[in-house]
Image 1: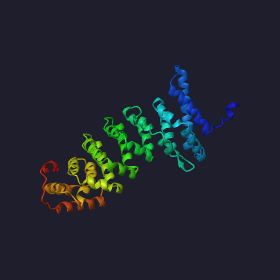
Image 2: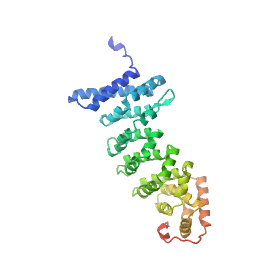
Image 3: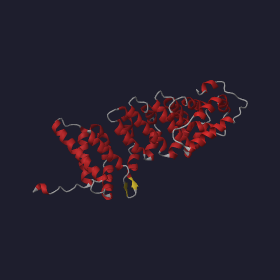
Image 4: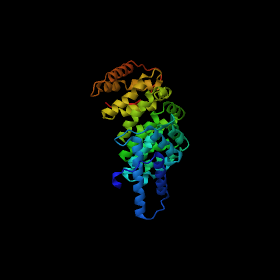
Length: 351
């Protein structure tokens, strides 16, 4: 008869309580009996799965908003959120994936109209000090990266990462030889520099010199094609954002920056050339070009016009064609004044 009756579903409070107890057990790591430890791990996996079902629904019923709110409130109130993050390296792959989904969902839950994850993270920013170095561990890097990007959705977290040494570390993680980890770090880097426009604009304005020096040398001039391609595309996104208009003007007024872009044109890959063009056109469109930039454009006029004249993309794009025509017209009508560029040959674009 016992098998005829389903056990009563546990309440969100009960689920969080059991999860916290099991996570504390796992964190303390004092159990020496392997069988006992395996039992606890199995219990934890089941509880995480139940919690996921509350937050996402079970396939037969949609999630209950009140149950989700209560679960989120208890999760953050009793610091179970931190314990779950700390436990991730010890979980098996299935439980780790479920836990990652739970962590992401909890950060979007509202309680009485408040996004309580933002309030929690504001008081627990040191979690970023745990998550970011996770890129150095190949076993956990992708999991931590996914959680990082969810955390960065909260402006207070993005500001913390931007204003600390963590951003410089992300720049190094982007160059990790492992393709999957480097790509994930690039996704995190992009999120940091595009999600919160006012915060990013303020950061770039204050940190312009060191940031773009590192950006140019480590990313745009990277030996990795993938890194260069993603970097020039992200650069275009940043400079074309209205919030960064002052930064854009400053960037496109630098001959050194233009030289890097002109050298990127040498890459035979059409995608790289197209992304480079979207940034290069900003230098040409600048109505207050410094004399040294005008001089280099004039010196390289014939090669640039020949390159641009032959430059096309597979799919017809009216905006691209219009932009290209405008760039060609601007370069063709440039006139050099008093100053000349003594190192113009360093800026030449190969035919």
